[in-house]
Length: 299
Image (tube, rainbow, N blue to C red; front, side, top):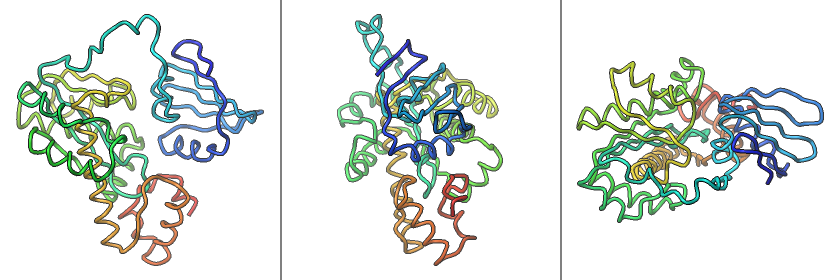
């Protein structure tokens, strides 16, 4: 890996994953353009990404680090000046709301946004449960942890089922704006139950998106967004609630239409979508799928 500060990254990329990365970028609002000696150049979310025919990938822009974490599963090494610093975010506040979402990269199923309030009454208990980023936990354990989190916290789970999701996407025309709306809704639901002055979420776009969504609801709160916020127990707990709800809703949709609905946006997902259209109907696809994904056009 070659880095030139936090705003530039270049490395070799597995070209077998080119189509998968391209589709993920398109689904998240990136604009792709052809370029000489390259597969494409993508622009969006504060970065420019170029994948060259040689297999080299170049990422440039102010949000390079979030891009590496969210799209390439790469955690940049800490800067030398930061290595001796403690983790200031872990228990920075005496009470705070953590938010996270599940389902945004899945063609089938809902988008789920969850929020969890952590304070002095439950901080140690939730931490003792072994709460961590839901991506590191099996579905079985997620369900068990979700029960305990719900029992011991003030929380909110906002489920945006596919039909409603497609309506909102038509209105917002942007996934990050839709996500911001969901995060703001979850935070607002908690504040209706208990006062809290701080909120933390994973960084998925411009920080002003959630803040503006909250202001539109008359909510004034100290909101912080940062990369890898799932390290925080409130955000991790929210990620578990969101993932658990997503899994349960996927099971219900599969039973309702008597079809296996796989996660993600792979070829298997595409095959099942084609089967659904042929056997149940194209007009019903919006009941189970996020229609703005590239898969819909390919079908």
